[in-house]
Length: 325
Ligand SMILES: [Fe+2]
Ligand SMILES: [Fe+2]
Image (cartoon, rainbow, N blue to C red; front, top):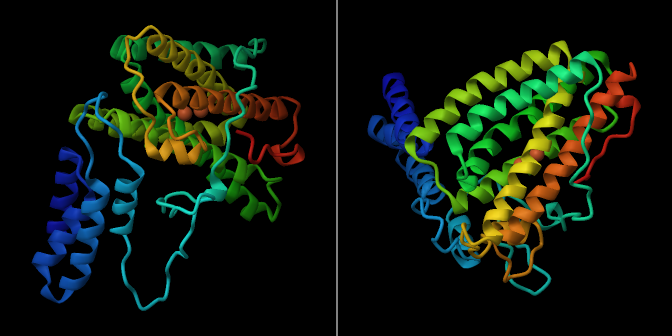
């Protein structure tokens, strides 16, 4: 059984399909008593792993298709757990299980995109130079393929908030202290970044070698950032602040290519329309504009967090920017 699971995991990593689907098939083959459970998980996996081809011109999923996908995830259970029916303001059914209406928001587009933290201290200069250095191979690899670039970089961008939030959570437990809301603020950031990724994969789909690259980058970056955050949260937040400045720059270039007609301004994915409360006829340009505004907010949060540490204080001593996006 263990061998079958290991083989399934390896195969799923290579071909990029849902791990669950292999696991469920393995369980099905290995133990007929588990047939019902395996069939249910297979249904879930089939629904969640189906993705359109890598074609930026392809029409994004409609709300009705998304709703159909999500309704396939309903599994009957004697635990009595079911999500109550949720309606939109216009009376239509809420099609998403991955986020709910009260988690959506209208992006604050008035945020200053040009703000920059001028590096003064040695650690600031180190953070700035590190980010500039990381930009070089990124530019070389992606060139002006901004859709692909955004999708790949969002897989990295969603890591720091989760690492910082998890470490603050553990610190709160160890020290019997409140976090001042910073755990929530950082995890919110990670979730927001993950929604950027969920949006981008509706438009650009990763090829097998890009999936492998994400695997390698995540393995290195998660561990490196984890250790760095333990050693110096001040430097960690500063690096993320500068990474966000670069993200604003990249999304600005992305918008430039859309405006110049180099990238087709396709309709916005349904998930983005609901998450950012965009109009029904919103386009890719609207989506990139709101994502760029989010990045500007992340920049502010992370430079702010680094400044708090720079003043010799702990994050919990300053009000956490919960809901700042
Ligand atoms: Fe992002
Ligand atoms: Fe960001």
